[in-house]
Each structure stands twice: as C-alpha cells, then as structure tokens.
Length: 305
Image (cartoon, rainbow, N blue to C red; front, side, top):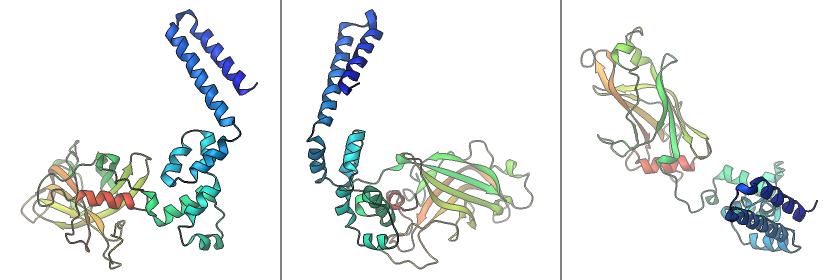
C-alpha cells in the first residue's frame, strides 16, 4: 500500500467512525487534515527535498539544528548528518587529540560530548540562565545517620536578616515539628551537635540532579542559629576567572535558625519555628556571600549535572 492510499484509507475509516454523529464541519476538518498529511508526504518524497533541506541546514548553528531535529524523523535524520557537525567540531582544538586517544564518536554525538566536557559557549547559546522556578531542592537533616527532617522544597530568596537576597530561604522546613526540643528529647546527649545536612538541586526540565553538600556537620553555633559547613564533602562552584586555593573553594553552607538553649551558650535543646538558609560562600568574590542570581548562574554552568 502506498503512502497516498494509506492516507486515503485512514480518511475513509475516520469518516466511517464519525458516522452520522459528526457535523459537516467536523468531516470537513478531517478531510483537510488528510490533505495536509498527503501534501507533507509528497514534499518529503520529492527528489530535491533532502538536498534542499541539507543546504539550508548548513547555514544553521547548534541550537537551530536542534530545533530542526524536533520537526519530524526525516528532518532529524537530515539535521544529524555528520557533514553538518564537522565544522562545529573543529571549533574545539582538542578534537583531533580525542580521536587519537581512541574516540569513535562522529558528527552530532561527538559535538555533544565535547560540549559536555568543555562547556563551550554554544551549550547555553545566548539564553539567560533559568530562574528559581527551574529548580527544586532535596534537603535532609540527620542525627547520627538517622533522618529527622527534610523533603523537597521550592526556592525563594532569603527574605530578611543580614543575608537577605544572598541565597535561598526555606521557611516551611519542619512542618511536622521534628526539630522541636520535645521531639529531640528522645536522643541521648547533645543530638544537635551530631546533626548533619545534605542538599542537592533537581533541575525540573530533565530531572537531573546537582550535588551541593553531603553530611556537613555543625561548624559554629550562636544564640539564634547553627551553621553547618565543611570543605571536604561539598561540591565547588568556583568562578572560572579567579584562582582559588585547593583547600578553599567556593562552596555552600547552611544555617538553621530558631535555636533554643537551656541557658545561653549551654546545651542546645532544639528549634522553634525553624527556617533554613542556603548560601554559596566564595572566598575570591568581592562580597563572599553571593547573591541568589549569581548562585543560579553557577548552578546552570556546572558540568556536574
């Protein structure tokens, strides 16, 4: 059965199924759809179509070729032809070195691998980094390895206090009251000093995750908050234009507010109405606590997704 006869059979079956319940307008719309399908099929099968489309694609860049590839299977085949991607691959000075090292990838797959490796500007094109709505945060608070609080949270900037706008606040951190002094009474000794925090970011568009910190412990305690920080179990988010000491990169820390003490500076019993603050601390920045928009840019540019 030819493509044209298959479309005709599809149209006839559609009209039969609609039967007498369909209005004249609905039957006309079905016929018009069938005609559009037939026209598109004839265009794709025309002798010069592939050649013409390939010539047009030769003038397109990576983002545009990606759009063309989403149009149909036939356009995807044309947009992924190796000869279109070879000039783009040559932008990477290491491409020949990679081949000598044994790489067997070609065309689009080779270009995509090089972009992931080196974060070439084509990766992000001219698009602005996504905003807070593009991400969720998975956060977990443990005591001696046992989960006490946590969950999936949406991002919002720190609302007030000394670090307003310099990071992200979590204002519904403990809806079940698991961090209150009463809830923590069941733990022996000083449970707060054994607390750790783990955080990762989830990109909503593709569900990929970005590691921030794992089991960072209490680094400092004040009358109002506890600071969780570590440089050994954190991913670094350095500014590529700055030089960093190996043991002092740009990393995230976490503050847990609402501390309740038995006496000032004595034993920390727990937290009332706790909220958290996630910041990115950059020792090479003019102002070490970075604004939320810079944090989002560093996440967006990370190669660790």
